[in-house]
Amino acid sequence: MSEDAGDGYLLDNRQAEAGERFAALAELFDPVTFRHVDRLGIGAGMRCWEVGAGGPSVPMGLAERVGPRGRVVATDIDVSWTAGAAGGPVEVLRHDVAADPAPGGDFDLVHARLVLVHVADRAAALRSMAGALRPGGWLLLEDADPGLQPLLCPDEYGPAQQLANRLRTGFRTLMAARGADLAYGRTLPRRLREAGLDDVQADAYFPVASPACTALEAATVRQIRGRLVAGGLATDQEIDRHLANVATGTMDLATSPMITAWGRRP
Image 1 (cartoon, one colour):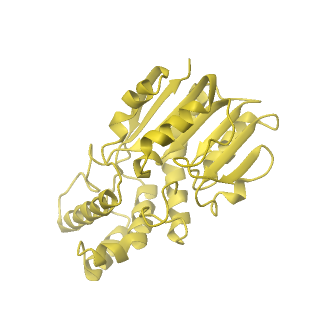
Image 2: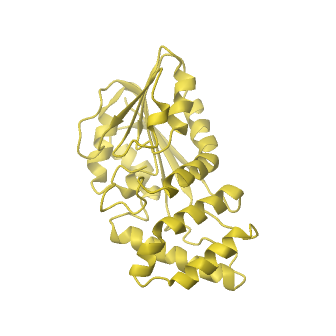
Image 3: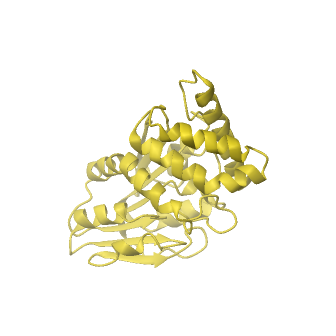
């Protein structure tokens, strides 16, 4: 995802670690995303808009479901990691969801994962997505809520876990300074109702330990280490020690809860 990229977005898609992050996020969250997509009945011949696609996994998964008669429009401000999904029913477009007109309309599904929490004008982005639905179409939004569970190591039993949680606090500080709403995920059901959608529901997924969590943490810390040091939030020595701890594969590293909410246009 990089719908609010540039100077404001902390996790720039142009960095090499972005590909590692996208792979880890796909492993962690694609099963959850597609469980919801399938529950909503997305299938052959349907039209989907994947907002802030980031990597190729979700557009390709949607393409498998809609088939050659369907259409998947995958958009992002930086499409360098998404371009590989282009072809067949998948069209990849450079697009800013908060500033640019929607890429067409009458979508059966509009989906965004880990996008709105980073977008400065979230209200405009949500209006654009809801307005692009056909009557009966579904808006499916997934965003983390670090405020609900702020710890990287919920089981903080030793110095390595304490250091990990302190660095995670620094990460949240950097995100907030760039306009991220760390409590946005919990608001999704209300915001979908306010957008005029019906049949609104929501649930959450909270990985506590997995190899993908470990890979995600290592890539994220490498990506932001310069900003952590520059902001006085950690030293290079502390970051090196944390990355060495993570590399042992013995730490139980969690993510923030991923809240998924969905609603249908009347």
